[in-house]
Length: 464
Image 1 (cartoon, rainbow, N blue to C red):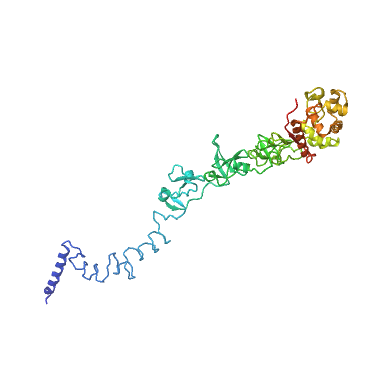
Image 2 (image 1 turned 60 degrees about the vertical axis):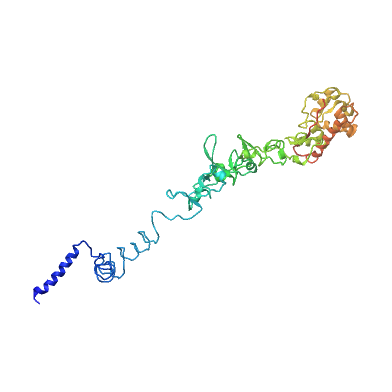
């Protein structure tokens, strides 16, 4: 064939190709081949290697390397990311880092994931911690969420942060000054017993909080100052005065005289753990007691003529009693004279007006207040009231001698009758019996308290 003859078929083929490209179809149109590729090999690409390359590779395997795999992600590995760790982040730690982090489950509640605040669960009854019923409560100084409330059920579980309020005390606000201070636990029985229903008590002249009370669960915690220590000294300071602790069980036992904790042991004292004690501060500079002995507990005895202990009869501790008892004993008076003197005087001395404001045979003298009519018969004779008064006023030895002279002269019952109702009386009355009962009741206690500062008394109406 001549050169013109073989070129003609080639020209015809080229013209057909140009015509096909100019009709608006692409190389991968469905009108080119049934498979939708441009080469008729059924792989959907424009080559003839049998694979489906859509990423502009150079080796016909679908990627830009030469490893023979089919990658569709424009990276250099086969995991659809850019770091070979099988996640969709840009690090190599194997986790899934996105705008929303995973919330660790816990006992707290996160109502709003956007603000990220995790609230602890409320522990108190809903009526206490959430009175308005909105699901938000207040405990330990922080907001909490009531479990099972609508807010809790709509929240995400989370681990609440540690409470920022720590310490052994409780942060309270003074109602008058509005100043905050750190209160301690109530540590005494009366302080706890006197606390209100929420657990606010009062001891050591300050507010205290009962442990495990409502207040202890609601209030923020705080660190106690050193000056809140109440363990220094066994005295009790009230209004600047340091009072010693009462040493005797009967100082203010079972409501004696009124159960307020203020006792008397020859000096004013405070019963430990009493209402008075828990309102005091500790101290050490109280005066050293100068008395001895203890009154028996008032619930251990009853009054001889009826009536209540503390009003009809009782015991006190009085400085100087032990010395006067000893002087009477050494003078020969004995417990009988001591008991009689306790019935008649406060100090076992002639501490009453001249003659006890009586005249004639009713005139009284000596520490037992024997009447002049008795004494002139049993000892003095008719020497006159002035003489008897002056002789017995400061002479306990002579007084004891006259006392026993009259007791022996009239006999025990006769002495009680003449002493109580007068020298001319010969009738045993109920009043005389009550007088004798009272004197013997005192005498019974003197037997075991002869050397101390106790003084026993019985209320008996005086003879006018």
